[in-house]
Image (cartoon, rainbow, N blue to C red):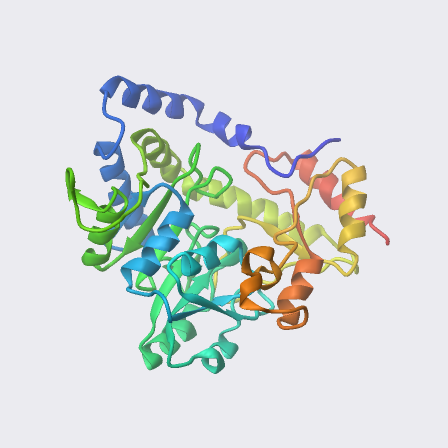
Length: 365
């Protein structure tokens, strides 16, 4: 049996007629940017998250970069961020000239809240919280620290659409929440797309100005902005998927629960779920001391897996100027050597799930 890591066509097949109908509607409308579809999606997504305002942009990275800029963070400033995240989280900081201050992750793969205060200096201006792999971070303690030290909070929710901490959705805690709608995300578009959300209308007004070259009025420019607009076709498609997000999330959780309950192998460490949080399983990430052997074994048996992520950001070529070395963040480095993401996607069959479980249970390095 051949099982790919992801298969987006199956989710497309679920709502094929709805997708095709709205695309045709937009094509026939003759209006393709900054129109009614975007405006309606922004209202609907803000309501879903539990905030007042939303600005659709071209990508999750653009959302992160805009968020840091809107908060007035730049050269000479520091932003705390976890060390095992994807590079986009860090790029949102450094593209504004600020410095990332890395914090080790906890056992749930999210930022270790007990290590944040030690990293705060007079230059610290914000905490970037990443709800990694789909599980909400410990937002009560993070917000308490931010309040204590007068810090801004940016939530990177790119992998956690609909995840909750204490029954409140991610993206609604901090000053600004940033989302990616990259096709593989739980709420994925059919191309690049992203959004910022906030309860602060001024922040969202600035985002809407920045996304359109820094202009509110045509051909009059307030800042050097971005060309980063969520178009009408992607907005219409996201509106369809947003209507079905609960059932899509329920399916992902059912697959994850089978993995959690049925994978039984002493060489494989299953992900842990914190009691106050919910997990939407953008990724199902296990750990193994024999990760590379496990990857090769599964590959030989027709099961495609992935590494999220094989290199911690502080050791990347892109950030060598920060002058970190091996051993500076041992937990992040350990995770990069041990994590393996298993196939988990909407439309995965019971037969495929069972096959993956059986092969995992048979693994012996």
